[in-house]
Image (cartoon, rainbow, N blue to C red; front, side):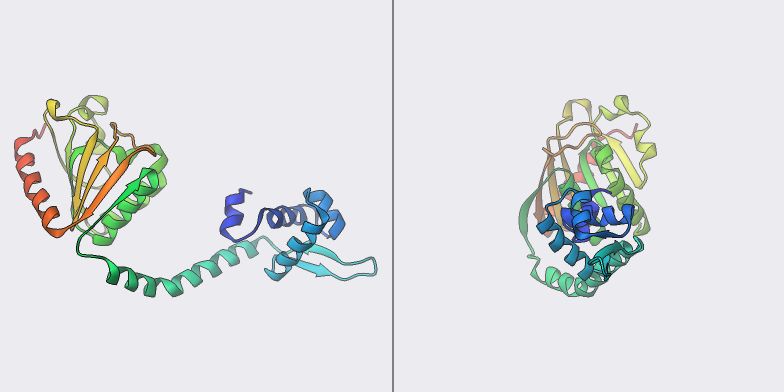
Length: 250
């Protein structure tokens, strides 16, 4: 199993190796576990005890010495659900504190794929229509697929509209792209001479500039300059509609 999954359940690499060893081989003594899992005996004892404490392993007392076995792997899902429940119990208070501390105006920077995911979360949280100048379809970077599908599912549920002024090049690179856009899309095309490697994105009180973009590509070097300002966002929306009227519908 992927070590990242075990780490998400707060299992160390040694604990993961021992648990998988016991699942595969069944009842073993501590020394046998250390050999089978390829772990130093002293470290194995500590990890076995932690597994017992977490309910993933149980001790069998016999005349030949203590032996151990793994519990049913369904226990891993129980651990996952418990962590979710703990998070859910503290999330409302954290969100209250987050909303309270947000300044009326602020600026910060995101980067790469995680930065794009942060912006999608903000779009969903705000729930306002989205406006883009210099759109390139960078959201459709293959490495963002799972996050993108979840984003548009929620955006469509909230009836968020997307007004996009695309770079001219997308018409030749992927002519059918706008029709495959999974959201509520209204679009036009900028004149060819105004194509860039940047993008302007406005929603709610947020104004964001993206740099380092290509058509339908967004990499870890992409930088997002985020500004939260009601006046600035409203100004860019005003300018957006001017550019919209000057742009081609075909």
